[in-house]
Length: 139
Image 1 (cartoon, rainbow, N blue to C red):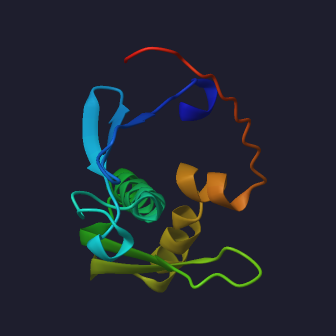
Image 2: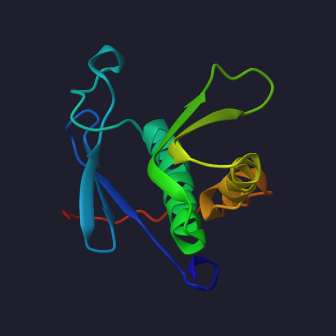
């Protein structure tokens, strides 16, 4: 399970404003800023990845549960929104399920949505240790 593993992702940016190559495991994707923020909009912006992480984790967790329980679920759509921020960070998750569920099944799916690993990460206290090293020379 993820909580017992040390997981990492790497972001590398050069001189291109603000194109950043992201790598996690064997996957690579670009992050960027929209053109109105000085980027070229060649990838999602950093905050988009947080929203996409919560949305995808919720959808996957619900799909796993529905499959395990044999629920009649054809499609799951999860939309995560946030902002603007005032005194705290808050997200809104809207889940649409296509299929036939009883009231009890709907209530259980809502409970399960809140148990996805990313939801747990974002709703628990977080500590971030940040270190900086300066390297001389070319990469």
